[in-house]
Amino acid sequence: MNHKKHKIIKIISIIAAVCILFVLGGFMAYRAEVSSYFDNSIKAFTVPDIDGGYIPQGIAYDSASDNIFLTGYMGNGSDSPIYILNRETGSFIKKIKMQDETGQKFNGHSGGLSVLGDKVYVAGSTKACMYVFSLKELLEAADGSSVAAEQKISLKTDGDFMRVSFTSCDDSLVYAGEFHKGAIFYTHASHLVEDGRIKQKAYLMGFSVDDDSAVPVKVYSIPDSIQGACFDGDYVYLSQSKGMLSGRILAYNLKELPQAGTRTVLGKEIPLYILSEKNASKITAIPPMCEELVTADGKLYTIFEAASNRYIIGKFMGLKSVYATPVEFFR
Image (cartoon, rainbow, N blue to C red; front, side, top):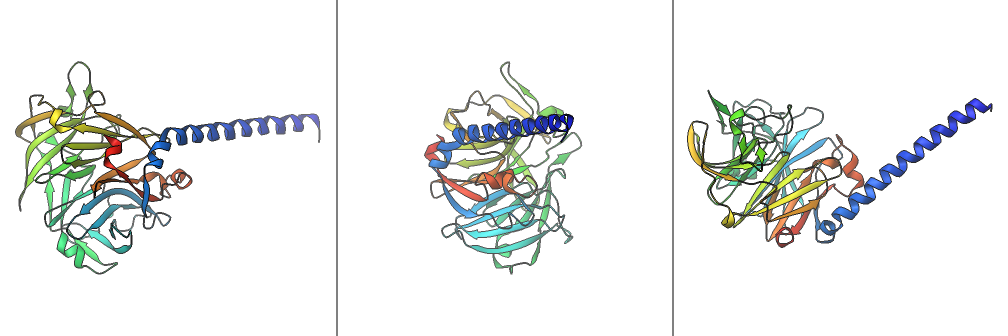
């Protein structure tokens, strides 16, 4: 081997070693940051099809059946799924293929879902809508079958729109949440909220829903990069993606949250509240790319997109499971 080739191989080896050390260093820093989360959490169940093309987005809970619902989309463009699992045992019950309100195949980015009463509300993402499914029909459907939405609720007017990236609910309202990040993931210009200390461009809006429409009742201004929200008694939790090695859960005590005036959203003037990084009661480090979250039996359940085949990295971080953590850990 001549001197020139030896020198090139040496340089390549040094670069490779530096890269490996950089990755290992980043991974060790990540594990140190989230070690408390893992120490206080258990693996509730393995995410179905996590190695088969499913890209996790949404998680919801139905207390009547004690079932967990998952949604998202498939990397190969096939029908977007709703998975149903038993919360207590973690056992898989069925997979439903979603159809839109016209009965056509739905393979969109179903960013999240919520169960309220006898309905399941699925985020319609860039279509600025929520798809409404019958809970009874989903529970009675056969594994592998297709179920059509009963209706599509539009969240768009001539002067406003909400791209529904995730959903949530409390005891009476359904919430639609937006994801804002840079110029690509944008929201309507009127959703900008500034108060001198913050500048936020996304909404989490609560609706009273009837058979025909959704009526805006209240709106929260939320930070950038929020992937999910969960209301639990006097608290609301937001999941925030901060890159490939970092995630956070922001907790807020709603009793301590003053009204910040009003906003006109989708043509209706409603109370405004601000959820920011500055007024969170606690911010907790969690693994990266956490999507929606939900509470059940005193635990907060989180699901991670990072373990899908689209990103891979989460497979080496133990994120192929949904984790359950006592809610007190985040307060």
